[in-house]
Amino acid sequence: MRMLHTMLRVGDLDRSVDFYTNVLGMRLLRRKDYPDGKFTLAFVGYGDEADHTVLELTYNWGVDRYEPGTAFGHIAIEVDDAYQACAAVAARGGKVTRPAGPMKHGTTVIAFVEDPDGYKIEFIQAGTSGWARRAAD
Image 1: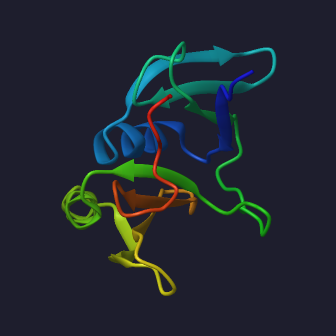
Image 2: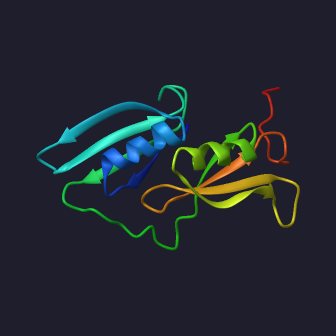
């Protein structure tokens, strides 16, 4: 088994695709309208779906806003340099909600940004976390 994708409902699909591709540097992998169901799906990610977990952005036609709710936390993305990643997001018009820096009770360097629908995205700086990925033995 493996994780395939996480689905987020968005209020403006073009705005969201623009954010994930032009601000966070993902690629639009595929997009399809479903007229009978009155929705459009767009899949974005850093690599091909065969090898990477991606985001499914779902636009339900006619719904322009969702409340993220209190159960959803955030999406985490590993970055080489959280300080530089925040600067790049801000330079592209994105919203940095927690500047890069060490966690309050640890040494992991993190930051948070927010997408156009209010979803939180955490940047975790590579090599600063005890949870860093390990090469397969």
